Image 1 (tube, one colour):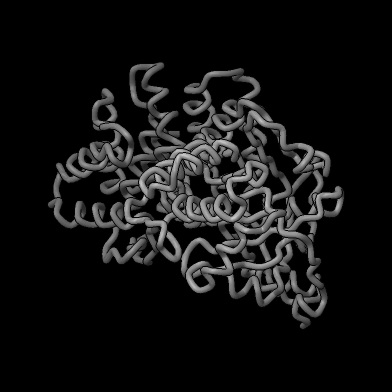
Image 2 (cartoon, helix red, strand yellow; image 1 turned 90 degrees about the horizontal axis):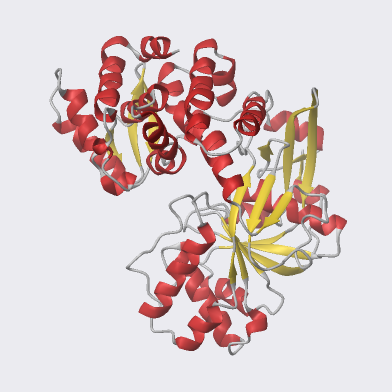
Length: 490
């Protein structure tokens, strides 16, 4: 079998984009779109990837010359489609932990115009230990602040060399929060008023991204390689659907011709409708169901949609609780939800529940909690399906031996990884270890979890009836089994 570099050749172009993150999503979403923009418009720009963590995929990406293949599969208008696109928009991947000077040198590129990122939902956060002299800083905002300061100094504060940031992290107002943290570093590092003024010439867009990207299709990779005629260690599978909503007061459409290339991109001055719809319905349906579904015995999203019991559970959560908690046209929201469920049922996408389960505590706060509290505000009582989903989260996080960002749970005697922030895992492990078995165990653990205001942004025990509901479901899961609890709900 040929290697991809024997079959394809990189296309040398000016690097107009720096991208913090080299994972599957950005390569199947952003870099795939840049490849199409290069083909269909006069953009003629490549992407330099920055590996955000010391251990990553940079070596593999560089060994393949930045080349990889996106596999798009799904159903459109009742017909199954499969598309293969070799992507040639990536120039290289730099590891700032081993090639710091080369990485920071990207800031001196006069043709650089845009910065894209996806450093997980916890990535846009302040790190008090970051310093300007670090090689590199630990956090993404710290790296971005130092990167911008190098550019500011190199071009002597020229406002024409300011950059446009288009972060893809799934948090509300991602661009605004990134800017806020960078300005905080600028003040703490005493980088000067001139630099702070120059930052105002940069544009920090808020965004919404929408494409299901399961990642490397491990089981199918050999057969896909046979079809392609070459081996690609960076194959990335994704659904056909894509949507990129970019919010900015400035007009970048001429310089970044995504729409002109025929891509499903929306430039807007207010993206709140698109964000709420997607995060609460699509992402919310994922997070509200996958932990219970995994404990129930399923492994993929497609199985959830096709399983009679779990599909009823998911539909109850979406149509009976999430949509009623939202403002807006209920008919339009229902049409969007129907389309989401069709996407979930895509037979070509093996979207693993354990992949979605990563960082579930922060995901629940962003994706599900607004619907849960919204229902309570409207009805005065906790919604059953979403309250149960919080109980399922607590049950899923029953694990042992936390080490770094992972500890071990057990499903029917088989181990599974629980992955989240180190502090979250240690606190769950300690809570289960220190809480004695018995009739009050579910209530004690529920009270401790719901009362963790640093996780949820508030004390959830303050909501009338919620603690009782969650504790009741948790105790029932342990005493009767999760299947019986779901049967009772639907």
